[in-house]
Length: 128
Image 1 (spheres, rainbow, N blue to C red):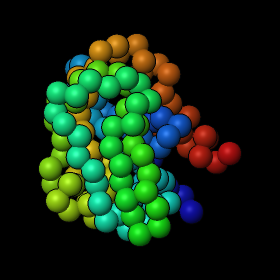
Image 2 (tube, helix red, strand yellow):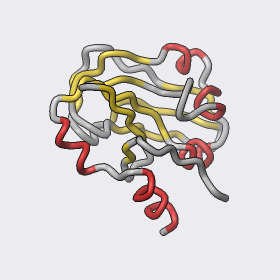
Image 3 (cartoon, rainbow, N blue to C red):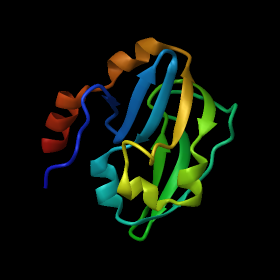
Image 4 (cartoon, rainbow, N blue to C red):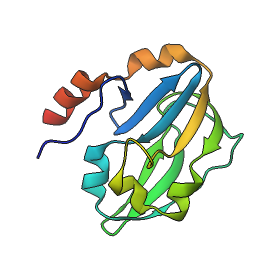
């Protein structure tokens, strides 16, 4: 099955995506990840103001199949949490790159973006 990958986003090997606007990265999970999880039934909440390092566990997502940790693709401070997806976890399945975003990080070190993949790189990675 072909999974939707959006140009212009950054992708981690843990299947998170990041959309960058200035020094803010909006983070979610990829279409591939939401499909592998199945129907998401719970999205954990993270405290605004929490400082995270790249690859720290930020929150947990639970589906009918499994629970999965969601990692920070970059270091920084959590500045916003998507309350809509916390109250309606199915948004992650319906619109993983839009309404299903999870949290926003004010990046501490934008240079870390260079360690993430672009859309083409992520597609190749998922073909392996």
